[in-house]
Length: 305
Image 1: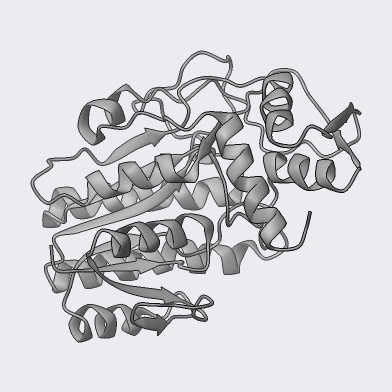
Image 2: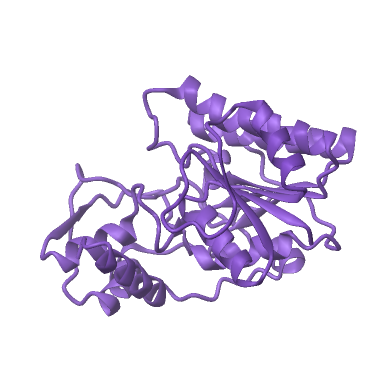
């Protein structure tokens, strides 16, 4: 399989991918701004977008596949610096694709987002063929990245794929997350204040389910489309989420308030995941209650419980 470069190894998905690949005995080189604690694999620092760093990594470590999970991970990060966020996410990806083309990297897996779709007129299921009409700068950057991937695939034969991920949660997520907040508040005897607006969905998928799809996407014999939806395949209600977290943290209390934080909602229907099921053997298997328990263990280990 050669060496797999995994970026964003301090983040939720990047760390989980690197951990899984190392556990399977694959050669991994990690990349981020700083190394993660206890890093057990070769590491390269990279302050995106720095184009030259991609060439150094690919050549210096004989990289044959790349999982690009680095970058600005959501609209809640750098909300007042949209130009910088686009430099990191779009220019960073463009530079990666160009380096991968030059050095004949066999496959690139990159993370798009459910936010690339933008707000929809109804809550019907959303297939990959639905037009991307982002209504945030972050979502626009993801849609632009997907366009770059399609262009490099069509014109240069680069084997790259985008995974449009819904709300990924689990041990390691430090940005705004309803499930982690419910766990932390429940452990500390606080009531979680949440808004529950109409016309939106909640779609949480556990990080290890996402990693399952990534590992299959890395198989060189798999012919893949340009983009796949990765989510739970259903809309989840706020009571459903709260009940699941209560199985792990019985003290969870919730107050729905109009002016409270909204947390991880989308004005569109559930992502249709049949294409990922067909091509990536994707089948989200971690129940919300199990994911909440694993999140509780991580929160407690960090001393937040």
